Length: 172
Image (tube, rainbow, N blue to C red):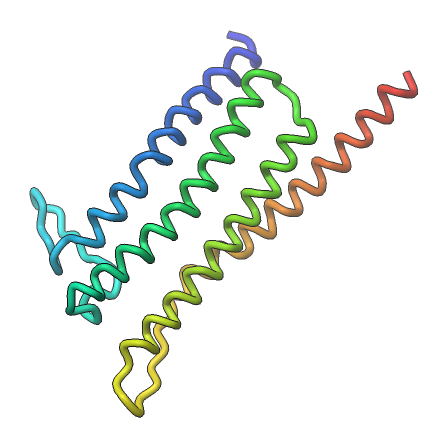
């Protein structure tokens, strides 16, 4: 099996995985938002984020909307990756459109981090008792920022490499 065939098989497998992720992540997010506290399904303990803070149905609705927006950002990000792998499988080279998809994916990671930090802060302030200021921020969300910046750098390097490749082809 040559490298081109291996590349196509790997890209196709990644496309399938990303397609199913794009479809099922929002569905699972909504199921997670509407489950009761500390649900056990066939031996698996499912705990929802900040569920102990949210007691009313309005708060559950708010949490469902927050999860939906977050899941839509993740789905858009995964869709960009799906299209990137599909174009690599079909064309086999990086061009301007694939670099643009990497820029968009990096931006989605940064937007996702800022969105999570902002919603955590707003919801913790909203549910704080009068006179008490408690801010809940999940620091795990900050990890998305260096990933996004790394993807911006990768896209920039690939953009320069594409420009050098085009310049080299013009010379020959």
